[in-house]
Image (cartoon, rainbow, N blue to C red; front, side, top):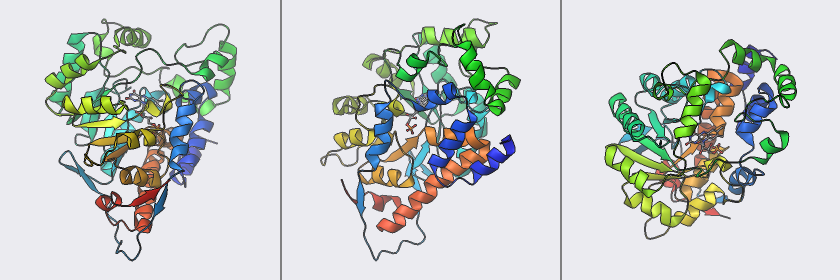
Length: 392
Ligand SMILES: Cc1cc2nc3c(=O)[nH]c(=O)nc-3n(C[C@H](O)[C@H](O)[C@H](O)COP(=O)(O)O)c2cc1C
């Protein structure tokens, strides 16, 4: 199937699962595995999705639900839906220009787009495309001057929301990558090259695009910090060397002191950590296990959300990501107490399979499924989802 056929097909996908299959067909297996498999044996990534299937609505009837209103106000801004696109690093590997495309899609759909701290695109370029919809995700560096500069650039560019990700204190490990010996992180070796080349040749559309645009993409926002004259590989190595994986509360406090705008902490799940993050001045916490990429024996995100909801503080500013594949998953999350949801893979599948039309389709699918669920449970607007009855 050619590129244009693929795009046209993606634009007509019916579900996010359709887009996932199309995206995986376009990518060599070792690249697709990087998106899909999650840490260890992938248990948490799968659990995130399956956990949503255990919840059932008890709908209200005889409610005027037309037209359904999916809009919501968050941090003084009204968005078209209670969801946004989460940070995904190095998206240009999967589809050249994906960060730029996703920013445009978010602006047109009026939803937030979190630009990854390990993005292919520089922050300043994305802000120009979507000034009112770009949130910026920061990975804390070991270099204070870099952290201060990243924060300065965010302020100068007009970023309204800074997201600090707390993910892996040590490098994460996937059993799939370990077994095959082929991984994007380790790159080809003499032993793995033949397998990798065959895999790439079986996916000529992706491979042609990858080679035509110069191979591995740059880390757009980081390139300026590496020694001058550094090329893609040196920039990535410099980034990894100076990435402060094992951040602690002092690091978060330092960011809070320097960043005057809205601050979201993404990736803490234990109720004591969530409370501490909120009390150090975070405006919200995203309950996230990094899409299952951290540890294969974690609770599903939706279960971590439930562990953090208590009747005494029903208005806790908690967002959720992980496992959202249907609009009803968003409705379930809101009914159980999330204020907003994010997803990583759904729009990544869309943009990989079908460029801009594919990413737009992913957003449309989730929005129309959410609106459908709202109508069927008797929730004409987002605040009424919060009163919906859900059983397990
Ligand atoms: C391939 C891939 C790359 C990711 N890169 C980042 C990143 O750079 N920064 C970040 O905060 N989270 C990153 N995440 C995690 C996502 O932001 C999000 O937490 C996760 O994808 C949510 O799960 P879902 O994919 O099931 O929606 C990444 C996830 C994937 C799958």
